[in-house]
Amino acid sequence: MPHPMFGTSVFAAPMAGGTSTPSFVTAVHQAGGLGFLAAGYKDPAAMAAEIRSVRATGARFGMNVFVPDPAQLPPGPAVMAALEAYRQELIPEAERYGIELPAPRLDDDDSWQEKIELLLADPVELVSFTFGLPGTDTVRRLQQKGSLVLATVTGVAEARLAEERGVDAVVVQHSCAGGHSGAFLPGSAGPAEGTTADLVRAVHAAVGLPLVAAGGIMDASGVAGVLAAGAGAAQVGTALLRTAESGTRQLHKDALANPRFTGTAMTRAFTGRSARALVNEFVAAHPDAPEAYPAVHHLTAPLRAAAAAAGDPERLNLWAGTGWREAQPGPVAGVLARLLG
Image (tube, rainbow, N blue to C red):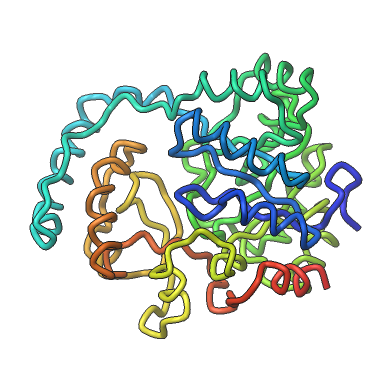
């Protein structure tokens, strides 16, 4: 059974970069799930517009916010040297499309404070955080405005820190999940042992918070497995990427069904932060990208845009979890019906 706090056993993961559109989040609600808008990479005005759009439909929804890493703003000399070396490494890739790579952008905190102030001025039902933890005061202020606060964690140590900060629940993300790892403690971004259900059991034994399980959940048996392990809901992303309402590029949707792609890997090649993607030529060619998020994200953005315009999946960030082969096209309602059993 889902936890009473959540009211559903299936969340749609917040997928930044265009997937989690207002129409997608609304479709998830209408199908019996709960969707999250993604504030990442958007300015506060765009974030506010999406909140208004979903709220007008009457759908339940949450908002996910990226937590900036103060240690990366700006990067130190060693990281700067690594960034320049990576920029030089990518010049042949840029020449392929006749574009120039930008100078590294070093001051992007994703409008962190402005987005927090917006959520305090215009509260939403759930606010989740990824890439770190908000301060205790921020957690308390959001709760005082009526928001439930969730933090993304990848293990027991991170979950305990989140509990200390006073959050209402944690999203327990296994490393088999597609897209960016939410890990924020040193050494936490590596492969998690066991299954998602195993990780849920470990975190459930360590903290007294409601849990949302994320990673490799593609069908009703996967949902049932994490609920039995102690989760109050399952969060799915890859399972919904190919749906009609998903804002994912068609090139990405097609790649998920293309037998040319035979595996996934964790890579920093596109953004400077570990993320699971289909192994394409770009992932294979650049295994040693620096750990410098979001500077690498801004460096490769023109390359990714050019690849998309050229219809070239080999240089696109094809985020995908390990269960990507089971992702199905069609309406969100059909996929949610299979997940909800």
